[in-house]
Length: 299
Image (cartoon, rainbow, N blue to C red; front, side):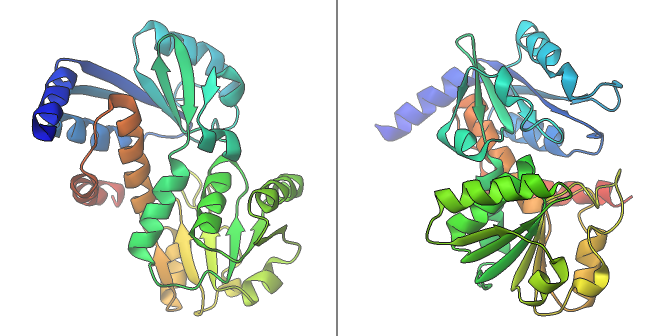
């Protein structure tokens, strides 16, 4: 009976086409379109995924209201949202999932029944990637760089996975302090604080999570002085374009265990596709396809 129900559901979904997209700045190198469209095809769907690049369009996040209206009018089923719009989009939505509300950040918007519904698949994507790539590392003391929309999601993931102490740093000290306070309230049994000395915090840490745009192809460089790294750290980066950021290369040169942003990109995409289509993507198939796409990011 279950098999027939699944077949019927798949058949019904196959009769539909899906139009989704990504709003962000400097997203020309994103592999999301290729991942979504390939898995959509494998699921038997007519699935089209378009980039809406603020940088290419010479726009900023103030264009979000008009872009959401345009997407609705053109029949989009939903949108992924990335830097710098994950928090700015929230006032424009009708509903938020529990995760999105708790995190104060949205990376997936579903258009359904005339409503805009915000979700966050960043935190679950990072958690699945971390558990796959660094399953046995210590989470006793973790330092995180970045307290924006993506930073809120991965910090939540780190604490959910068992981080005992989490120290946050951001170019905007007030933002780091605000996120630390929110997380401390959400996870009262853990220690969450905004840091004052990155050198001192890293010297005592087991791991480093990097959750800023630094290191992306359009923002090359290191997010911290390389001499602050030490071989007893594991280093996780959420940037995946390029897949081996300068931070990861520096960490690997010291003998650190590292995690690229690739797994997070895959698993957040899988979770977003489930929201858009109601079907269950094959996560391992998407991961394998993603790996085959990586050479194009290295050129």
